[in-house]
Image 1 (cartoon, rainbow over the protein chains, first blue to last red):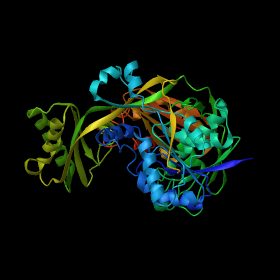
Image 2: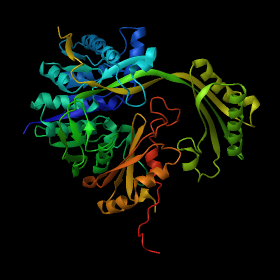
Image 3: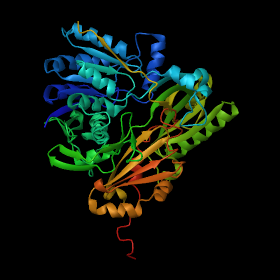
Image 4: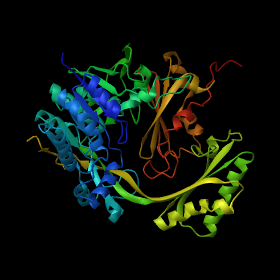
Length: 447
Length: 106
């Protein structure tokens, strides 16, 4: 039976780079996938592109490509990535330029474009899933609308001979499904195979999160050598059989436990994991350790894909102002609480217009609020944190200022004040008929 | 005994919804999870954090439960005022839940 090995070289845009190089050098892989596009990253990238039309792709694109292209070219490892963000074509051109500078100008580089559906969304005035209202309500705060494309166009690009496929918004598991469809010729209506392939993609897409990252809990779940965490490899057979493993000798561990945690990561109803290509069913999945750092995962299934595609809509939501300051030693908690009361009153007295405010003590109740944290005893040090939502930057700045002025106006011995004010680009979702996005493949370079 | 002694957990986020898996270390404890780690208890445990409903899904093949908690992330990961906007730390908080090993032993 034919088998391919797919390495997962990044779990988010800022992820470590050496584990990807290690995968390419020692992983005996045929495909290297980089998932680098968070929920709102496209919206931020779109903002960047409005300022500079050549930008709008992943800021680490050059560093990653320079690190892996030489070894990938020598071992004919194909790369699939969503580092195109808001500008896949720009990212492909940049990659071609990098390849040329490395003496690798024969690499064929394909951009998948067409996920940008801003115009179609505006015309349709579609309802927003997360809150009352439609696209029109966002008015000129609307920045971007990108459809989650499926694996089809990426698989086609691979079949057309691409060595590197760069896309913008696509479903994360689809980045992994594409090499499977290309290598095995899976039919796009074989729902069970696509469902099991989606299980593979879902398990691999967060890279180190299945090899022991985001997992360790000393004394309960110990993980060796997290500083040299190895990234995962999926061994996929043409019948959908799957083994998750990693490079021998790298840090971390692949166990039934790491696989189970990642299987349910960001999953709601496990019988309906909605993807552009299939509605996957994770409910019957089985996980079995078959060797050191080797876990067999079986039982993923699927049913017919939906008639709509999810679209991620980026918009300017609000502004956030924030300030922090620390207190330590005897009475730190009481002084921290006094500080919060002072800022609360100051924001009222000076009329700061905030629609939402948080007053909390880091080290006491900042993560889970006063009710969950009620059992806390006196800590040695506390850090005051006040954050508020405002309609403009000027108001946001005032919140941090009221914390900073605690230096000379607040309780004794406050130190290490910090303040910030920023605009908030948020994302919401709409559903678009799947026929509307028209994905296209465009090759650059390859001389 | 704390839930932490028999189960491990991971939090994921989508918009304003948080999901927390609760996975038995040993399959023999799965019935205990089913019986005692209910949606109502999870909702009560996260008083002041989770404003919406808590739905539980059961995965007997991997001895796991999946809790889906709506209106749990301060209006959504991308706009929340919270220090931990993703709610990544919620899984550890859930493992603090008290579990009775022999419920009828008085």
